[in-house]
Every structure is written in C-alpha cells, then in structure tokens.
Length: 314
Image (cartoon, rainbow, N blue to C red; front, side, top):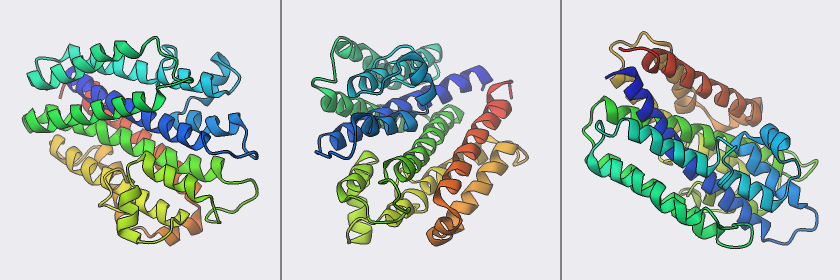
C-alpha cells in the first residue's frame, strides 16, 4: 500500500473518532452545568472541555473569555479550531474522498452522508438549545461509520490503518479525560481519591459509555480509584487504555514485516505496563504522572507510525 493512501485512511479514522470524543466531552460538560452549584463558576465548568481537547492556549488567543456559549461554539462549529467537530468531520471526509476507491462503496457513502447531513446544524446556536441532540447525532453517525467499516471492509492493510487511527485517538482522549477530571474538577484542596460528588463521576463514566459497565463490574457506589482502574487497566472495557493497546499491538504486528520498528516497541512497552500494572501502584506513583507519561508516549507512537508507515512507500 502506498504511504499516502495509508496516511489518508489513518487520519480519516482519527478525525471521526475525534469528532465523537468532542461530542462526548461537550455533552457531559453541558449535563454537569445544569446541576446548581454556587461554588463553581461558568468558566470552571467549561474550562475542562478545552483542556480535554488540548485547545486551551489557542482558545485564549482566539476567543479569550471562557463562557458556555463561546466554548460550545468553539468546540462544535469553529472553523479556526482544528479539533472542533466541524473541522474533524470536514477533514475526515476530505481524507476519505482522496482514497474512496480503496474503501468499500458503503464506507464511502457512510462518511460522505455524515458530511452532507452535517449542513443542517451549521446555523444553529447550541448554547440555547439542541446541543444534546446534536451530540447524540455525532456519536450515532460515528458508531454507524465504524460498523460499516467493520462489516464491509476486507481485512487487509487498509482496514488495519483505519482501526489503528481509531484506537490511537481513543486512547489519547480517555487519558486526557481522566487527567482533567482529577486535576481540574476536584474541589480545591481535596486529595486525589477523596470524597467527590457522585454526579460528577457518573457523568465521567457516561461520557465514555461506561456507567453500566462500572455498575456490573463493581456493584457498588462510584469511587474515583475504581473509575481510574476501569478506564486504564480493565481490558474488557472498550474505551480503556488497556483495551485500546490490546488492539494497537496486534495491528502494528500485522502491519510490520518485522518487529524491528520503534512504534511496535513503544506500543509493546505501554501494553506491558497496562497488562501487568496495578491501580494501587499507579496511585502511589501518581495518577497524573502516569497519565501524562501515557499521553506523551501515545503521541510518540503516533509520530513513529507516521515515520515508519506514512512518510514513505513501504
């Protein structure tokens, strides 16, 4: 496969996943903002959404004041924001169009229809109404796209690059979500793992479709360290870091003619930490430090994937 074809497929999948993750972040932030709390300002509610998306500095430069209306528009529809839902879906469609002959007809029609249907939302003000319905639409279309890919594409390199982009992006988002939760949403002066409002933690679980899974596995009240364990070390939780790297390591092995590439080595190193790690040890060394290192390593794997697979014909 030509590297440029692999590059388009990889980033198409990443952008679709990014749009869904942004919709999840907006949805959970909006739901939490509806709960009356005199101790938390509007800016405190909405700043975490910017942190999760990694756009805080750009937002401060382009927009400035953190308000619900500004953040919602910036993360949903702002064309200047490369991580907005608008930008992500547009980039996904452009990448898909460049390699449409590589995909099945159903896969191309799925992503093309997402972009065409998206036009109905362009003039809406989601700060006033319709945000929840819009986020549900984005998540549903993302699920549909992945289902069409899985159900129609040949299990070849093209399919593997689509899956690889999905899981690299998903792992990054899950790690950012957990990190932001512990260090921006905890009450001032409260230690990590202390008593935290139940609704906040249930909202975090809902944002990654994990509330029912948590209740089924732990059958108890929501505890911060158990949420961390579920989203990092549980291999049976689809959006956990462990589950993502179960897939990433297998995909990189399938794509590599040999195991002598840095992306595969780094992925194996992270996978081993997640497979054999204990949540108690992670908390002792610091959850923030663990997640920060993970985000950096995951980004480095992305760079190595680009260097080894996407920047030259192989």
